[in-house]
Length: 120
Length: 139
Image 1 (tube, rainbow over the protein chains, first blue to last red):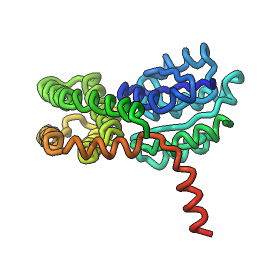
Image 2 (image 1 turned 45 degrees about the vertical axis):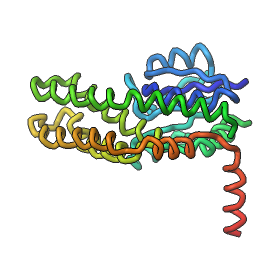
Image 3 (image 1 turned 90 degrees about the horizontal axis):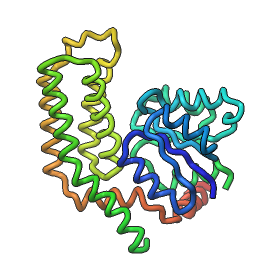
């Protein structure tokens, strides 16, 4: 089973994502950027699902840092965000995000983007 | 959708709904504490709680709450920058916005919110078919 790491500080959102994805993927959660990097090193996920706004960093900074690390650089990532700022969406896509979903997202569309990014 | 799957999502919704008044109440308490004594860390927490409500309320089907929290978040966001004069923060507006959040919670039908929540969040497997129909239509 492929692994997804969700970095999302809102526990209600994280629980929902786990419920949506756990039948098809092994799901790990981190509630801030620091915990996210630690879990990333340990679990080597096949995909990152990043909230844009997380404590101790941002989803964008996590993606940027991941791209700089040779052993993690190929990990695909998808953003979810309540932030409507087009500059953030633009930056996310420039970094090579497999998708950018505003909250509330459509679960099926998110799953389709995950499958495409992860190569299922 | 099978009943077991639906039950899991209904449980999530009920947990969220049960805790929602507490979340709004906490935002209210933080605003009052800030009004009594300014503290940058407290403001940061206040902003995060409003941001979190903005994100989660929409996901759980509480659309009016999402819109109101979005408005309050947009008002607060510039004050996160160190260059902005924090004395300009209008607590009358903030209190009014928080009261609107409380009213929206009381006025929202949980059945309607649940219906929106289930529609967006349960994976039915028919989105591919929908996309195919749309692309056929365009052709």
